[in-house]
Length: 435
Image 1 (tube, helix red, strand yellow):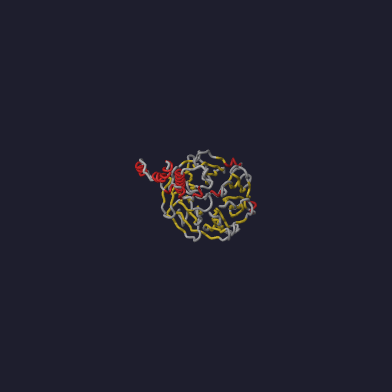
Image 2 (cartoon, rainbow, N blue to C red):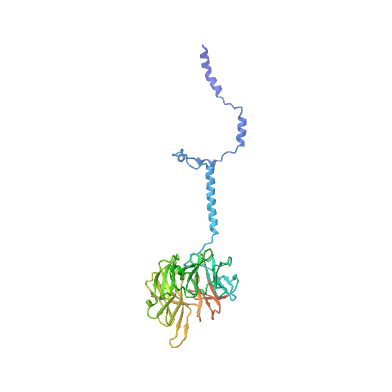
């Protein structure tokens, strides 16, 4: 037997010996290090969440984003979203400049000339502006600021603006205005317009960051009139919903109701008094409807009797206010649209035919759809300052004579129920807030 034969017979045994499992010399060190190392958690393995078939489908060549970076990015995105939501919850929500709004506080001037604000629900009030003889209160359309006039040396008036709580009080008129006949906020709350004693239309920056603008000069118009001398409203001049067109009665070259764009272009005539019938000589108290589609205007005759008319915004479809009498002795005056545009309130007198006597009626409200009219609140012997509540459900009245005697009355439009407040005042304005 050769040596090769002997080796061939022994080869299987040798292979069996070599195949026996052996523990390497460094096994103990390897086990100790492994035990001390934190293992990767199972949730970090992508294949635990996504089928391998989805991962291997033409994705092998795509750049791989580390999972840890993706998780951090997702956390940052979630934090940003939460932060935005929290920040938004602290941002005051403001009402639109036109249309119904929620009722806020009522600002008024007391017997000493101070400005106060009162809560109509609790009846509580507080002084927000000291100083005497303040007048012509006007909350900004968003309810955040309050404007008013105050006497200046020489008999003119300064125009002041403060936050609704009376803070940050500033005078926005570089020089005082001579007996302003109209004051109202622009819809965005950045300007206040006024008509001075000469009939000049002026615009003032509500934060006094810019010089005043002579709008009459910009529009190329002469002496004008806006509103009816009290109960001033933004919609008496700025057309809803954007406020980009002005409404005014021009007295230069004959009385006529006109409108013009803020940039001075597009001056147009909507109405002349003679077109309403014999005897009408002047117009006043014009006001845009809350949607800007129509206008209500007061037309006066030679004997100062007045009637109310409604017309489209383009000057067409001029009609007497539905449901009202055309009796020449029937005085209809100082109209105001309800916030939702479905009703118009006005003051009403009736002149006697045989003497100089006058029958005075309460505030009356006409439903534009039906023409039905109903009286609201008490009889106002010598008229009153009055206004709609922002939500349109009540009317504020300030009679100088009984039953008010200077006390503010809040009248429910639907029921006629009158709430007599404890506040004695000479001027008022109801704050608009978000619903």
